[in-house]
Structure formats: structure tokens, C-alpha cells
Amino acid sequence: MDDRTPEVAASGFTDHVLVCTTDRDEHACCGDAGAEAVLTAVKQWLRERDVFWSNVHVAETSCLGLCSETGTGVVLQPRGRWYAGVTPEEVPDLLAEEFGPEVDRLGAGVAVE
Ligand code: FES
Picture 1 (cartoon, rainbow, N blue to C red):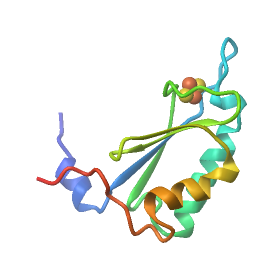
Picture 2: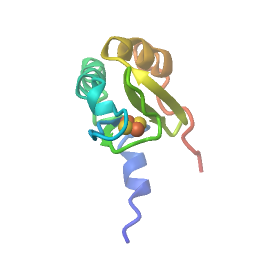
Picture 3: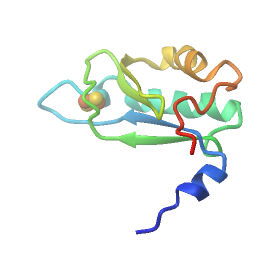
Picture 4: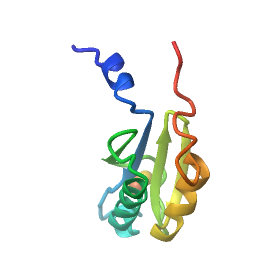
């Protein structure tokens, strides 16, 4: 095991956006509710502010327990925010509300040692 916590923290990473892209047949799933478009919208919003993969990491995930027929499950960590039914059109307002319109509120919830 290689504890890379100090290295990651020193790199400026502060936040993680998890976007569920699960596709399945037996239950409602984000894959059928626009997950790929939500993922694209998240990346675009962060790229436009020059924080994608510098300060904010984005990961596609399997089911987050936020399943909906109307949108995608999105989780923001370490701030511990959980959203269900997110549509691509809602992504800019969601991220602006959480991170600040100019991403000046990154790092909420990060443990300080
Ligand atoms: S299928 Fe996406 S949260 Fe469950």
C-alpha cells in the first residue's frame, strides 16, 4: 500500500464529483436518464473554470443509491452532498451553488491536519 494523501493534497486537489453512469435493465438507472450528458456537463463546467483534474476530480461510478427515472445521481465529496435526478441543464447551477460561480468555494469538508 502506498499512502499518497500528502502528494494529492499538495497537488491542489480539493473536491471529487462522482457521477453515476450505471446502465441496467431491471430497475431505473442513471444510464437511461441522461448520465452521459450530465457527465459531459460537469466536465465542461469545470474545464471552463480551469479546475478539471487540477483541483476537482471527476469519476464515473456504479450505482450510488440515488436511482431515478428523471436524472442522474451526483455526489460531491468530501463535502458530503448527494443529488438524485440531476439533468444536464441543472449542472451549471448545481456546481455554482456548491463550488461558487467562479469556484472560490472549493475544499469545503476537507479535513485539516
Ligand atoms: S443507477 Fe445511478 S444511482 Fe443508482
